[in-house]
Amino acid sequence: MLDFLMFSAASLADIASNADIVSLADVSASDAAAAAAPSIPFLLRLLGVILAGILTENFVLSKFLGCCPFLGVSKKLDTAVGMSAAVIFVMVLATAVTYPLYRLLDSLGLEYLQTLVFILVIAALVQLVEIVLKKFIPSLYESLGVYLPLITTNCAVLGITILVIDNYYGISAGYTFGGGYVTALCAALGSGIGFLVAMVLFAGVRGRMEQSDIPEMLKGLPITLVAAAIVAMSFMGFSGIIANLGLQ
Image (tube, rainbow, N blue to C red; front, side):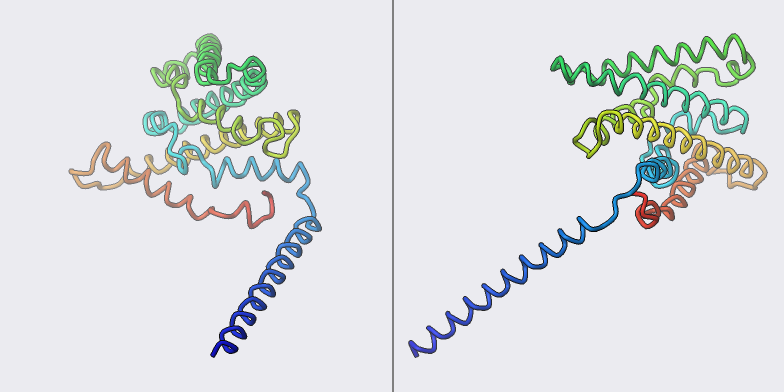
C-alpha cells in the first residue's frame, strides 16, 4: 500500500512537472509569435482611431455623451450640420490646446487641475465660435440659439480632451509625445465626425417621424427617445469592425 501511494505521488509530480514545461513552452511560443507579428503602420493606426471615433466609439450613440444638443438641435438638417461643424472645431482645437497643456500641469504636479483648466479652455473656444458665427453667419447663430453656448458644458467635448490624455499621453500607451499628440488630434477629429454622423442620421429620422402617424401617447419626447435608442442599437452592428480590420 505504501509503495502504491509513493508511486502515485511520483506520478502526480511528473504530471505537474510536464504540465509546467508545456505551459512555459506555450508562453514562449506565444511571446515569439507576438514578437514575429508585423506591427501596424502608424498611418493605419491613425485610420483605425478615426474610424473608431465615427463608428464603434461614437460619443453620442455608444458612449451617450452630448445627448442634449443631439436631441435639441437635430430637428432640422441645416442646424444639425451647423452644430456639428462647431463641435468638430471645438473638439479638435480644444484637444490641440489641452494635450500639451496637460504636460505642463504634469511637470508642475498640478495634473489634478486638468478638468478645471480644460473647461476654461473649452469655454474660451466656444466664445470664439460664437463671435465668428454672430459676425459671419448670423442666421446659423440665431437658429442654434441657446445650444451654441451649451457646447461649453457639452460632456462630449470635455470627454474627448480627457480621454485622449488617458489613452495616448506620453509613452504609457506606447507612443512618444509627438505620436500621442497626432493620435489625440485624429481621435478628436474622428469623434467630431462621429457626432456629425449621429446628428445627420437622427435629423433624417426625425424628418421621417414628422410625416408618420404616431400614437398620441408617444408624441413629443417619448417617440424621440425611442427613435434615438433604435439608432444607437443600429451602431452596435459595427462592434469589433476595427479590430477585425487589423487597425488596432
